[in-house]
Image 1 (tube, helix red, strand yellow):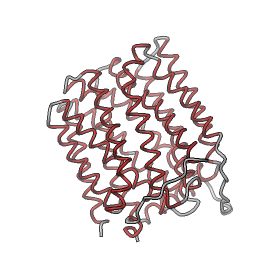
Image 2 (cartoon, rainbow, N blue to C red; image 1 turned 30 degrees about the horizontal axis):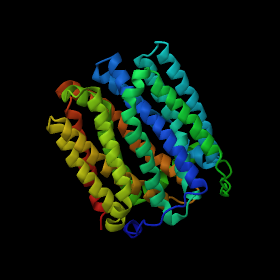
Image 3 (tube, rainbow, N blue to C red; image 1 turned 45 degrees about the horizontal axis):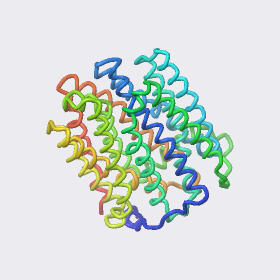
Image 4 (cartoon, rainbow, N blue to C red; image 1 turned 120 degrees about the vertical axis):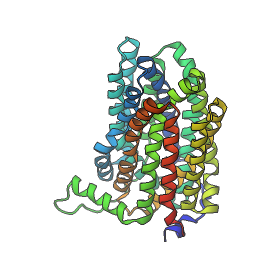
Amino acid sequence: MAEAQAVRPARAVPAWRGGFGRLWAAAVVSKFGDSLRTAALPLLAASLTRDPLLIAAVTACGYLPWLLFGLLGGAVADRIDQRRAMWAVDLVRGVLMAGFAAAIALGHASIGLLVALAFALTTLQTLFDNAATALLPSLVPPETLASANARLMTGQQLAGGFLAAPLVPVLLVAGAAVPYAADAATYVLAALLVASLRVTVPQRAPRPPGSTLRAEMAEGLRVLWRDATQRALCVATTLTNVGVGALIATLVLHVTGWLGAGDAGFAAAITAYAAGSLAGGAVAGRIGARLGRMRAVLAAGTVQTGALVAMGTVRELWVAVAALAVFGLMGMVWNVHQVTLMQERSPEGMLGRTSAAFRTLAIGGAPLGALLGGAVAAAWGLNTPALLAAGLFALAVASLTPQIN
């Protein structure tokens, strides 16, 4: 049954008019601001300390709330108006980012403040992401889900990485606080776009008497675990996220330290990743239609493993740039089909909880990976996190192989 769904062509496209267009615009605007922050934050952390473990701790605390609050965010998302939850969360995040920008402008930046900000933003994201995943199927026809996911992810990569990342050095010249102030403004704009959506809230079946958030969170875990396809994807994605956490946490040190490429090299590396992701969004549907969703995910993981090996063994900036471009392309193929499978296979009224269970277990690997990346970089060299990630991706591919009929 899983592969029968997986081979269905994903060529139908959603209409831009109406809800999807506004949701797409909100996602793209918000991602643009987030990428300004994401590109600037490692450079700020590296200016405050050269300790790989402390820098990795900033990344780790950006994932930790998923372990603590991810399941709760999914259960709440299935109970409430998802549109209202999303714009309210974005307003709060805008206020937090404006305060952080002010703190930097006044000279109060510290590693502790960076850790607190990362933790707070991701705590709010646990509700936002689960609500957004559950909202999308109510805005587009079922046959356009894969295309809608690809367009959302591609737009986010275009605005966030391909356009925003090269701007960071320019904005930093204007002031250390400028990227973060811009991120605050994009949160507010995204909140206004989401608030303007006109969505018909689906009728939810009444909850059983005495139902609690704890029981509903457990139900989401049970539904995920009983579905062999989603269970296998969750295990594989957890393994890859450990690797991605190790890579991202130390990427600035890999490029500026091991490769000696400086801030410009770091900007080139993350821009290459974004460009590859953009290309991946354009071809993900065709790859899925040709191979099937599960085979597309398997192929993506295999190619990503090779890219990571090249990145960790060849001490040349151009190799790292090319490897990150390929890594981003295949990462988009993986993400589009993994999310679409989850949306297709989750029972009605359960998508918030099943997506929360998936994300909590999968994203939970990232803080572990961030700490492992910092530890192996300190012990064996700044290129070793890429090789650690390659090994974990190879394990993920092996764990998915039994799902292919």
